[in-house]
Length: 194
Image (cartoon, rainbow, N blue to C red; front, side, top):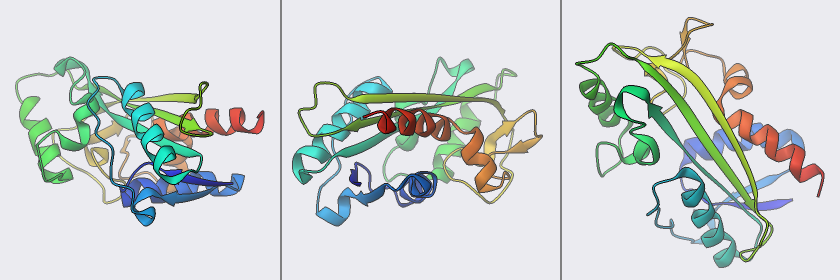
């Protein structure tokens, strides 16, 4: 099945493609169809994911998949949350986002955090019954980065039961444990039932 991915994030495309490939889904990034990114004006992951999926489906005429995900830090009241990719402002920068996060946490010992992913699938732009799948991945934040894999906040996100950061875990293990992997597994089960 050909599906437009409502994202221009190359790392996210690679991760989603790798996870969905065994199920026979062919993701086409919206940028390859000259579809600009949608605005993400909402304060929740689910509203932003729905907005992005409807935008991509409407402009492509294809089924659409959108992911809105981010890091929620307990000591920061859930921030950076939906602003995770733009936490340090524009232009987007993982390094600047990580530096801002570490600075924000410099006065607290509470390092609890979790990644959240909401994935929305629409059969068409006006689909009245979108498929919505969610996942959470709990861990804690380190005082400095470790590992060269992953992206975003992965070098700071420690998975306590492994003693490794998300940037140190092999890709297959990350997909099995991660918020996005959890949500995609839910999604594939629901898609198979259509």
